Length: 113
Length: 118
Image (cartoon, rainbow over the protein chains, first blue to last red):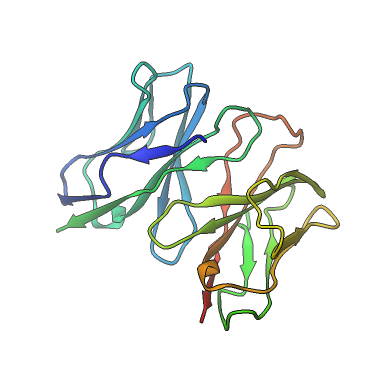
């Protein structure tokens, strides 16, 4: 079945550095992708989304890049802060619009000050 | 705007016992989802409702899990009897979509119920 995977299970950065979290998706029919942040003891929180007709989208301190050729998604966090420490998941909508999101395993981001 | 509400926050039971979780989605959200998140993994869909109808329950272990959303608002998820491998966080999410094939819906999650089966 479809699956969304992440390249690294953990990422450690210094406060103020830029962070890049990567995700490889397997279903070329997916046309909608979301990044979620999950802090300990909480549910996933929406960060940013992107549709397949775009290759870049920017938010506040975050940028998502989509490379459909190699089925790769990345989340860039500028000037990483200790509050950014969490598990980050990418998710895709799979092969059919309207179906629930499919999540990858997550990358744990640790920010040290 | 109030978020997705879930209760209880934590639950500890012994194997073969029954347990139920409750979810109240964001007001006006037609679609409701139950996800299971095992420690160290991403959330996995159990069931998706559109109003009070089931859209997808293909990954729900129907021999022991059941879910309902009778009035198209609140939902309950039940496990009977529980097994050790059911230990996980059960997340409820909702989205606005009012048509079964509406695309690209953001999901908003509750804080989850952490279930420990001993």
